[in-house]
Structure formats: C-alpha cells, structure tokens
Length: 341
Image (cartoon, rainbow, N blue to C red; front, top):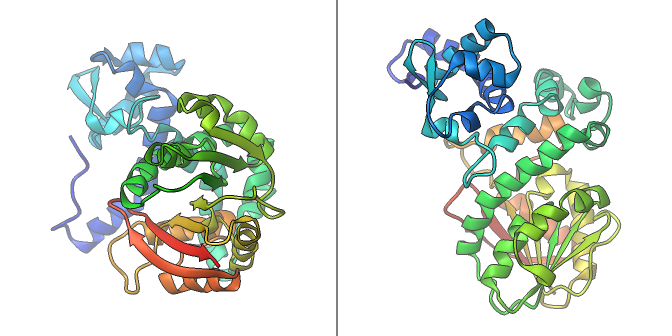
C-alpha cells in the first residue's frame, strides 16, 4: 500500500497530509537506521524477528512497521509478517540507487533541529544551526563524527546520481587535468575520468574528508589516475587544471564566500580552462520543483542558497571568470559553465 494522493481531497485533508510529512520522513529514517530493508532483501520476515535484529521492543517495533507499510516502505504480507518493496529498497545499504545514507543525514539532528527553526531563519535572514546545534553545521559534524560520516556518505549517494546525469550532458574529452573542488569521495571525478580516458584527476577536499574517504576513492578502481589533495578552498585550490568541477559546493555558501572560492579557482586554473559548477537552478517563475525546498535547507542549516542563472553569471563575473552557458541534465541539476580568460 502507498500513501494516498492528495489529489481530489478537500483542502483541509490536503493540509493534514502536508502536516504529517515530517512524520513520514522520520519513519523512513528509522526504518533505514534499523536496517529493515537489508533484513528483508532475501524475503519476508516476522515483525518479532525484525525487532530482535534491531534490538527494539517488539510491540512498538511492529507499530513502526505497520506505519511504514501504510506509506509503502515495507509491505504487510499477513498479520505480523513483512516484506520489502521497491520504495524501501532505496534504503538498503551498498546497492545501486541507494539513498540510505542521504536519508539518515538529512533527517538526523544536524539537519532536523535547524529545520525546526525555519521561521526564525526567515525572520533573521540567516542560518539557525548555531542556535539549534551549538555550533555551525561543519563544526557540528566534526564534533559528531558518526553523523558526519553519514553526511559524507549521503553526499556520495547523491553525487553518484548527479554524476551519471552530468557525465552524459558534458563533453569531458580533451581534458588533461581535472580538479574536483570539494569533491568528497570522488563520485563526480570518477565519472568525468571515465568519460575522459586520457585525463588525470585531482580530488580536493578538507583533510578529514580526504582521510575518511580513501576507501571509497579506491573503490572507483581508477588507481593512480586519481590524486587526493587535502586543503581549504577558501585559501587555495590545486593549480594547473584545464577543467575544474564544483558539484553542489557553491550552494553551501553566501555570495561573497562563493566568489572567494571561484577567485581561487580562477587564480589556479590554466588560461582557457573550463569551470563547471553543478547545481540546481532556480527557474525564473515558480514551477513544481524540489529546488525551493533545497533553497530553504541551505538557509536554515548553512547560510547558503540555490541560485538563478543570472545570479550564477554575476558570481562568475565577480570572480574574473567568463560566464558561458547553462546546460540542463536529465536530472534535477544543471551545469553552469565558465572559462578562465
């Protein structure tokens, strides 16, 4: 069974469905945290068995399973017996298309608590992470390494989805040295290198990110074609690239901070190098899109924002880069391209 569509319901019922949306999201996170989809991968299991595997109280665990079944995350085969579903399979570990880590990261305290202060963020015009978490989000993840690791894996899950769409929409051929700025575990860089077999790649991120992601980078199977470099993109980025990629980086930061990052890229890049910024684009008029929700996520958690095409063009101009074009991909993201003149 899946959650009923709001279409055709009276407005009050539609609003109540909106109201319970956060509850449904936390149900998904709990199911992922207890690894229920992994336990159901080989077939149906009894609620009592699943509760034991989770180390949870049986009666309340079955209440969780029942709620998860009502929205299609699991399926009730018969009373007390549950099976997996295609929707729930997206919460399995280490399978193609998994978003388990992303769900856990986005619905963990580091995001969940600041979102509880959305009204304050809108009124004040800045992030509520410090008020909700006691520090900015990046310091919070350093202080809570398990959640920080989940966030990094979540970004890699999303990056893998974005990378495939980006690689098919962009011509990487002819590149010799591709620098992925803030590239986390290298999913985007790996996709670019597969599309440009002669190129060498540089994965650049904070020291703790590089150290934590070594296993994931090795798993791409590209060996010495990927060089990892630790640093701070507010200070400098690796020099000599003829292609720089910034995937889901600038939306984390204010305009002034984004210009600082882009200026460092401009200084490091070879003349004529391409700069690819992979982000969601805010349309000129409101259309059904998750970009507006992500925009508020950036506000409440990070003091960042999603941007329109003209806003990206202005950032490029301030950084001394020539704005070239925006290329949509088959997914939600677009490629904003500039040139180092």
